[in-house]
Length: 277
Length: 312
Image (cartoon, rainbow over all chains, first blue to last red; front, side, top):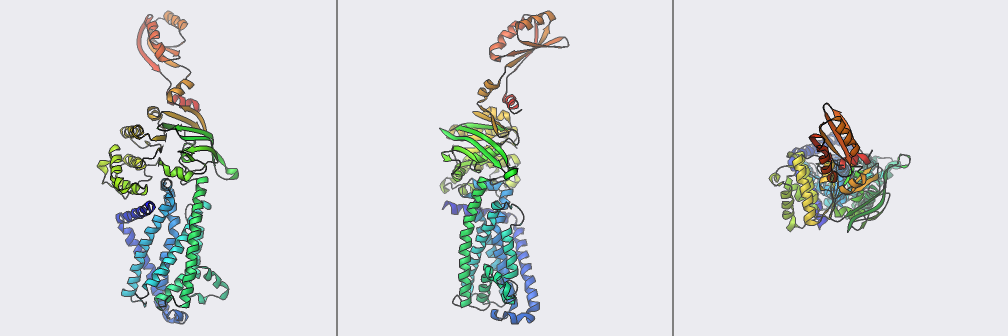
């Protein structure tokens, strides 16, 4: 119970920071809108040329890409949260103080994750409502809402687990600033091979295995089938997507939590939770 | 009862050829309720030693316990049972929260029961004179006040052992005095043990029951200031300036172990004695007979002298 209160307190601090600097939120939302709108206009422009490739997604490239980009933005933010939070606290020498609490470093990271989850979910909902009700992108909504939420939560769990694996490298590989190789690679592969901007069927058979290794491929596939085609979990493709995504989410969370704990033990034995000077 | 009882602490950083040993087998023994000072030059190993004792670093080798927890195996339990004030004023203080909100945040993460939160916050705010800044944003208060807030944060929960890494480093004399008084008061009221590093030797001399001087990761001296004075003193000095004739000065030289320096028409007599208090009356009586005393000065060995002596 105390740990839960502490997690909420760390999230509350982020909320206060946002309240103090509300422009940060406005700029973040504008940046998100710009990214989605860029893809919206590209998709709108090439819609006619590409519709054949998107038959299984209702032949609608605009809906396909808009929904993919919105979900990708959130999952990418969750993936990077643990490492970024750890790095910020380390260099601001806060991490050492958090470490004096019982499981304080983990509590801090969970608090940051909770805050990012709330913030990104809110902005994602804003984007979805904008594109459905104002821009009028074709989506089956709100009937698909519950199924979409489940896929979104599974993708979030996977991203946080993978994010914790990445954050572990802060102490394992001593990557304490800049880009962390695990989450960076995952992000790049997702953009290239997960079917984010174009369907996996466009790839030659020989490289498709990369797509099948990426949990985001299953998440984006399920999201589109649910949101554009109105498919339910009883649909064979969606069912496979959800099962594989669940397996990835569970594995990444278990591995992430264990690795992160080991990374903290390594920190205790080597250079600790702050710079030496 | 020993709160810290550690033997042979060794700690090194880096890998293989670049490995550098920072602590070379240090022993630390601190009793409950003590205010223990750690002195050393920059790079002496003070911060590493504090981190080891606070459970933030596991040493390469060491035997013993902190608060009854094994320093090699139970670092996480040690960490959760001690408070730490880092030397940087801003650490643990969130600039976008008010002073009270900062303490409220920490009270929550420390797991202080909801009913006791307000009482705990009011108590530390009053003791550290933070009440008037209660609703001020932390980013708008001075560095010294932020340092007091950082200390208030650490003392919010009454842990049995508090580590203070240069707690008065950015404070003016008045604020530093207030912190020192608060530390002594907390020790007296709650029996809290304080382990502090400081560069202000006068500060250690004023409030520490015992001090340890380390240099290059090795203990150079440990004990109360009085014990160190006895160990390292090679005599104290009484200086008398006065007007004497040369013959009388010669007589004094025969009677006492004295160094004589002529300054214009006056003489400066430096008497080397074992103990100033024991000898001063006899010396003054003796000197009075031979001339006019203009000035008398005494010099006792200070902690600063001892520090310089052992860290050469």
